[in-house]
Image (cartoon, rainbow, N blue to C red; front, side):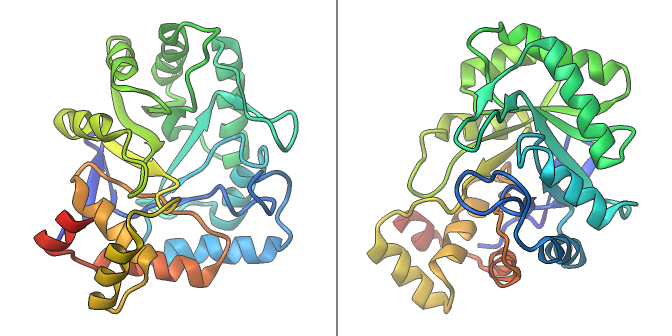
Length: 276
């Protein structure tokens, strides 16, 4: 069954169903810390992503930190019409092994200003609260983003790493257009959130969409039938899972990006989807 080719975010941003996550273009390794070893390669990759038709690039001030946003501006500014840039604030990186929550309103205001400067933007298309800080009431954090929106610095507000109850609390404070949670074939703990997003017409951006696999035998059988890779099948499953789904697979490799991008054309049958 074919899946919709595009998705609307907030009613006024329409993008391809496959975005690009800009976490892995920074320092090598799982820590994603520091500058890339191949800066020219990272720039070339970002430009290829846009050439191929991706219309949403997702980043965060904590990627590097600050490196991913700066690379995006270096590669793509002035941005082509129709390209949406999404970034996040609320996590800080004092060292390679740490991702510390800081969702105080004062920090979020400072983080947003920094992202605007690095991205060379007057307004960020989608600004997402990167996490929920247990030390700060969620209402205060979301309220800060709502104020940034009123000031014209943020077009739309999204959330990340939240549950259905937290989404409801945030929606009482501001209009929320997207949620970004860990979700893939192997980790479906956010199933209720996916369903809530679909019902409320919010986009769901699964991070680490290729992190983990379901039954190797099943996914390999589907991949063989389509002459595809197991990663392509995993992405096709996400696209079929819900019309709210907007995968943002990231990579530092041109070849891996092309492989992921080709998954847009892989349509799973009802039986294949059910088997996975």
